[in-house]
Length: 209
Ligand SMILES: [Zn+2]
Image 1 (cartoon, rainbow, N blue to C red):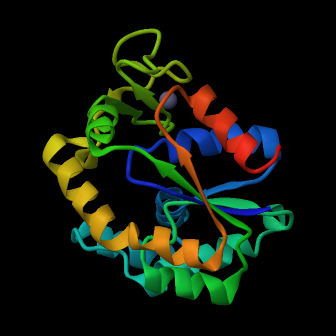
Image 2: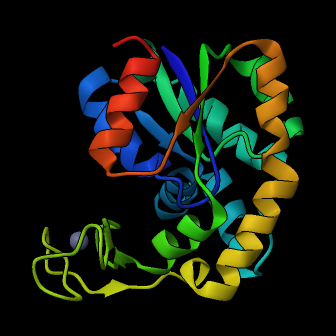
């Protein structure tokens, strides 16, 4: 089962992916994680990504696609995968088509006001990267990771001005993929508002599990 999760930042794609990974036994592949892992491992692609990110630039499509292609070729992807945060543009979707077929594109529908509320409350652990939310998923102790005691912080891209920019970018560059995949007949749109359990339930029902 090859799935793409589509939706605005803060639509819960990462959260639902993590839950779905346990249920479906598929790897969750996010480009954010791929970038971080490549930089950490110091691979040739990682060194390029590091340089670009350090100068504040956007990782170009060819590099992102190369990382995704390399990841999809690994053993754990044989039965399928969940791609989260990729493709982000129609050119990326066209490039993906050349690498791998896609069974279903799940579009998580969430209004902008809810996105802003969700993202501005997000906190990330500095050591393990686990995500919390001050209202919806608070840690046991404020500002401290439950798993490893790491410090929780607000990522720069979760600050309010940055959220507005991310939403505009999403509407302009990524949302056209909804129509694009819709015309190919592989799109499923589900209501992304509600608790992770509720949204996971809708997702499972939609894909027939
Ligand atoms: Zn942690």
